[in-house]
Length: 115
Length: 113
Image (cartoon, rainbow over all chains, first blue to last red; front, side, top):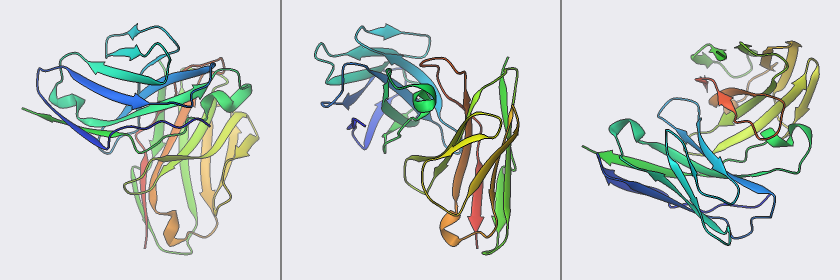
């Protein structure tokens, strides 16, 4: 499986935008880029996913580089509730059956939000 | 709406004792079901996944087993716990099609003493 590389930790101030980077230089053409986050003592929560085009939803935006070797999760206005571990995960689209669910989690980025 | 329930939330068990963790999903049919484990300070490791009743695949050899006696029930078991079985166990579900997201429960924190 292709790997992702994320910074171990990042800090932000409340109400400011946060850009969380992810490198995936060995991504294949059919890999989707998924982001999950995990709040303390909770299970991971789906945030967003995309293939080539930038994506927006109510939680965040996902900016994908033109060569797809990197992406950035954007939280437009960080709140204290956004403090979590953020995971960038590649998910193959052409695998059959349950392979779709085999999310391989790395260490992620610990985001600290200061009031 | 769909919900996922895991219990218990925390568990302390002695080495050599049996284990049974339960997970149930409501509000959906024929889900894919997963068991993950998260050791302290580490990422999540997929242990088992299931595409249907009595259809279970194991990702890593270990001291654990899983069963799916009903469509929306997933059980993680062990006959004899090891110290290394301590961790945060998470159940998750997804719909069968394509790239649907995984939805996780709140987990069970297991401490083997």
